[in-house]
Image (cartoon, rainbow, N blue to C red):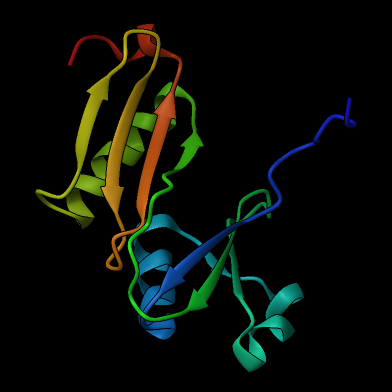
Length: 130
């Protein structure tokens, strides 16, 4: 058996226009370039974005448009879910869907390059109906 994994370190996300993507990720998801990993962004390397606590990292690679087959799913508590739902509906009107999975509830959306995201909570009872 291999040793247990500790956590996801980062996710590679491919975008066609990295400066535009940085702006979108800042406005929509609150992610900012990581000063600790800025040196990687030269010579085609990733530009790493992170949340304020540094617990979520997305590595943006600039590449030609290509289909994405993976959804990046992030977990939040019920209060954060409600706040994310309101924020995403404001930022991306008509482009956000929500699904009740009985034991969880998820919000789905895509970045401008078509990369799919999901924000999920398992605190369904705290959300109430709808």
